[in-house]
Image 1: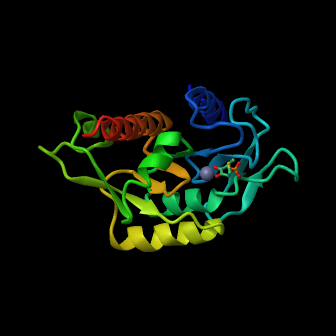
Image 2: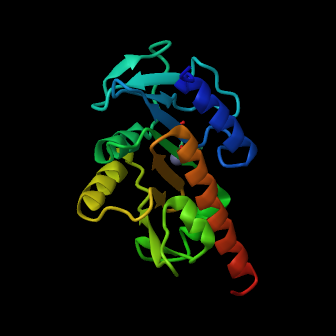
Length: 205
Ligand SMILES: CSCCC(=O)C(=O)COP(=O)(O)O
Ligand SMILES: [Zn+2]
């Protein structure tokens, strides 16, 4: 039996909250369902104690299909989820969290690409090369969220990313994947790599 996407998101958010990646109201998670619409977390909710009424179901064009109450608004960062689902038809889940390490590593370069260390863990992001030279795209953290979404669209249409993840500087990471389980795995792998990068710098690597 197919798991209810809202229950999947509630469990994932609770896990990420306990890891310190969704403190307070930080972050937003969405899952696409077979009719092409997606469930996304409501804006401003504590991500450690979501319930099934803390969600909105939307079409790709931003039309709200289901909401528990007119006051329950979709995530302020919905435009980024819409962009990801539009650009990547295979994406079925899009997860965005705020970790301390993601913010630190986003400052390790002034460029708009963060070089990732050639760790074995990159295989978990789908990189199976010998001594891989992989970067993660970084975007400017505009106050105007649709502007970030437009930047992502403009850049990825020309240069698709080599991993299914992006950073918004001083803000957090967004990953997308073909299932919620895979999105969780990508997030855990990426955050491991960020922790490694911070630790490596601390010990002078
Ligand atoms: C303290 S979090 C600030 C807003 C943000 O970046 C975020 O991820 C949560 O926004 P939402 O509207 O999805 O609750
Ligand atoms: Zn955010």
